[in-house]
Image (spheres, rainbow, N blue to C red):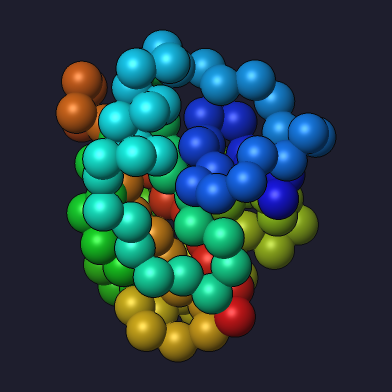
Length: 116
């Protein structure tokens, strides 16, 4: 799976993925010592400030309203033409789920969209 910038793919690395942007010991902490989350596709762990983010949980469109400006760039990066539509139709438990993360360094929220 080709991961967005600042994402850590949990599983077998894809040769097309960019090199990690975080320190090896932090990458190993996520891959080997952090519980994952259930996902439709291969789970992705987002990073920010060159550190792994905390997984906050699954988020639907209503959950994202207060932080929409923070997470819109993540969605637009992978789906620039339909980012707003996608953000409006996310759910916590459907086939289009928002996986919400937060930077432990600066508090920035990040979003990965998982499609069933």
